[in-house]
Amino acid sequence: MKIYADNAATTKMSRAALETFVKTAEEFWGNPSSLYVTGQKAKEVLEQARKDVAEAIGAQPREIIFTSGGSEADNQAIRSAAATGRNKNRMHIISTAFEHHAVLHTLRKLEKEGFEVTLLPVHENGIVDPEELRAAIRPDTCLVTIMYANNEIGTVQPIKELGAICREKGVTFHTDAVQAVGHLPIDVGKQNIDMLSASAHKFHGPKGVGFLYVRKGIVVSNLIEGGAQEKGRRAGTENLPGIAAMAEALKEAVSGMDENAARLSALRDRLIAGLSKIPHGALNGDAAHRLPGNVNFCFEGIEGESLLLLLDDRGISASSGSACTSRSLDPSHVLLAIGRVHDVAHGSLRLTLGEDATEEQVDYIIEQTAQVVEYLRSFSPVWRELTQGKRQFIL
Ligand SMILES: *Cc1c(COP(=O)(O)O)cnc(C)c1O
Image (cartoon, rainbow, N blue to C red; front, side, top):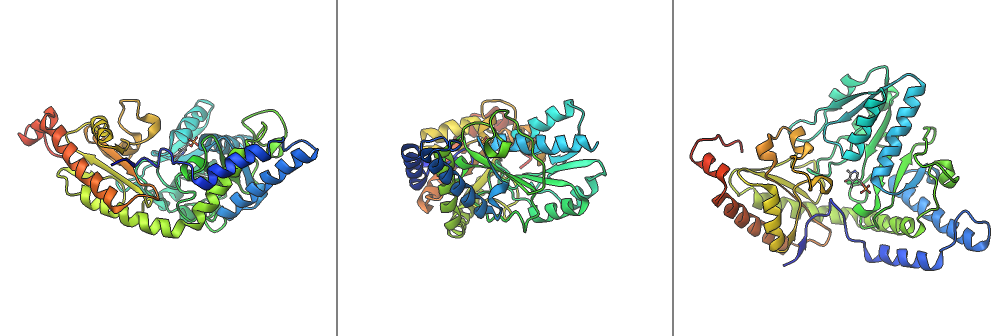
């Protein structure tokens, strides 16, 4: 059996998105900034995509800036709010310890440029407490940036409450919603969101394209200097095939969202129940407030990397956490943030199901994971010490 269970790393393009991509490249290859008909036809496709994307999150078309993906959108949102903050002498930013590196590394750079950053704790359940946000906001806070849903442990934040607190205190609220867009219902108005980042390849669109929503009235600065595209907020000839395909994928994701979420949540819970039977393992993050397809476990006495390689041999594509850090030997900063100790964090497994997952596949994953964990433990020195009582079990 071949099972792709790493949809948090990237998703396969949908048939409709792929067809839109090809059709747009073939028929609308003009430059949207050109004044002749070929250019203007491309411009129409661009603006229709902007309308469709805006509608999917309850925004106005002029509030959408197309970018090269989630990382660029995060960088632009944070840098823009920081620039505005600096002008007003407000140089304090609040975020959390388990953000994506596109956020954390941008914040680290801003610290070197004189900003002060507070990272809120996310607790064992992987969820930020709104009251802790309220307490952390200062008169000089210019930005709060908190991810909508975590890419490793799938936990979903109380975005509306967090946004309401920011609104009340007059602080700009950005959310990295890359894992949520196309998977969870989003309404930027009702949820008090000022800025939001999204990426097409996380909802069956193409790679290298995404968008940043910026509420009307909030000043954004551009990261890329050049032409006047995107109303001067993002230079460069637009990636029209990618943008049109993203809009198509998003429309599709939104129209099937309720049904997919219900089916996937049931499969997710079946997978969690099955993996919970493996001794000395534990689910990471809250069981209920999590993305429909996300399962993340730690198993004591094993290395996550070995587990992945052996699962791959058995046809299962999984991950130990974030794809971006899978080549480093450091344990996941997300698992450390929720209080897992190094040894336990090393034995992590992230399985993120796609819309086409089946019960049969889930049962196969459970069976194979149980076998591989037992096999790896059979020659693990750490496991021997645990079973001989020379080391204490944590899970
Ligand atoms: C994938 C991801 C990103 C980066 O998006 P790219 O389009 O790959 O740059 C940022 N944040 C989160 C939460 C992600 O999952």
